[in-house]
Image 1 (cartoon, rainbow, N blue to C red):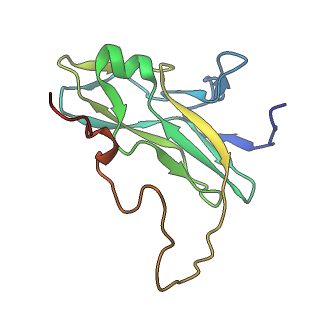
Image 2: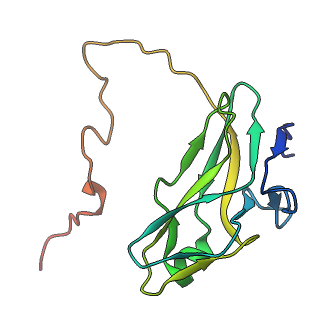
Length: 156
């Protein structure tokens, strides 16, 4: 069973005619976000643009929303979010805006109502730091930056 959480949403000027974020399939984790641009925005290769969504949300305390790229736009057009994933904190009350980046080779047009990102709402935990003098050992130890992909086979 999937937990449901009630989140208040407020339409802002410029978002009146757009759909609220919505799950496109029953098993979707993310809700698609539509562009609330007044006129088309062309994002040239290597450029970025701030795209409004036309709404703000009120998350309950203990939750956050992550804003993520849409995989189809990334694959087909090289469009992603520059700060992916973006975090919407529970105490943020401003308009959700998206920093779209064009890594593709062609200009990308953002039109009003285009689904350009997705939002996933999560529970968050608060960290309470406990300082220690030494970290306990583990199988991994301090290996990082690709250490698990190094082949241990002998040449032969």
